[in-house]
Image 1 (cartoon, rainbow, N blue to C red):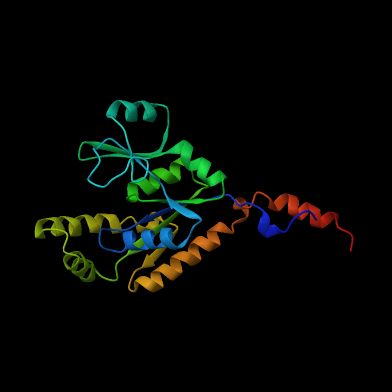
Image 2: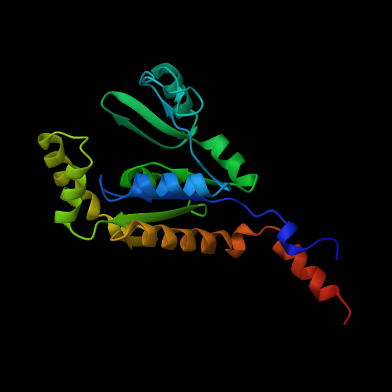
Length: 215
C-alpha cells in the first residue's frame, strides 16, 4: 500500500457557533482558533469603515457598497446581512478553497447567518448553539463584563429570548455552565465531525486497496 491513512487529506468543514450575547460564543471560538491550527476564522467582507487597529484582509475585507452588491449579485456570498446600514458577508469562493485544502472555517454569525450557511452549503456546515445555564446568569455575565450600558443590556436580554427560541435549528446544543467543560465538549464535536465518511475523500480508494490485498 502506497501510504498510511493518516497521510491522506480530509475535506474541511464549516463550524457555525451561535449564542445570545454573553453566553460564551466569543470565548469558545477564540480559544478554539488559538489552540487548533486546523481551524481558522472566516474573514467577512464589510462595507463599514475600519476601526482603529483593524487590518484589511485580517479582521475584515473592507469594500464599498457597489463592490459588495456586485459580488452578491454574482452569488459570491454564502451568507450576508445588513446591520446598521452596513453590509456583511461570508465569501463563497475562498471558503470552499479553504475546505478543499483540508482546513476548517469558524463562522462568527447569528442564527440567521447560520441558517443561510446551511442553505448555501448543507453538507459542509456544522451548527452549534451555546445556551446559558439560566437567564439570570446570562444577565449577570453581561453586567460583569462591563462593556454595555443598562439600556444595551436590557436590549441584549430581550433579543436573547428570540435567539434562544431558534435552538432546534442546530445540530448540537451546549449549555455553558463551565467554560472549560463546554470547550472540551466543543472539541469532541469538532473531532467527530472531522471523521465523517463524507469528509474523507481518500477513503474509497483506501478500502478498494484493502479489498485487493492478498492475505
